[in-house]
Image 1 (cartoon, rainbow, N blue to C red):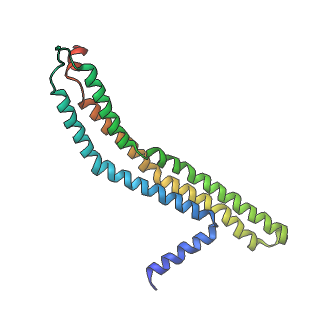
Image 2: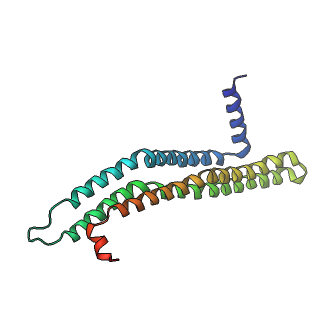
Image 3: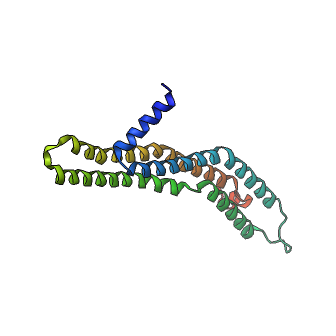
Length: 190
């Protein structure tokens, strides 16, 4: 048979086994992974260009002459540096908190699925009693499958979210070191 049809049948059977909460888990997991992929693209392709533009802007600022009265431009240069770092930092860290929040929501949706499945088990018990194990088993599967799915979906993004945050912090730390004022090295002393 066609592999796509087989895969769709397996996914459909899994969704029926776990109940309606699996649709919400799937939607949140898809949103989380879309944001992770967007952040990967941004950090690997776009952020290096932003950092290069920030370096060029800083070089132009550092090469600017002193004020009209000959006073140093330290205060203004520090503010320009802070603005550059803030702009690049916002670009690098955008949506990272949202990804982490979605990772925290996924296990909670799994617990919602557990409650949903347990309510089904109790409904079956009120109608059929405890003697019909086959009907109770479907409710138990609806209680356990969403929990597993929520945990697996959250764990699937954990390493990537951590790596994305670390990568953004490392790039920003390097940029902060590169955007030092020429007077900074002299004022620190030996």
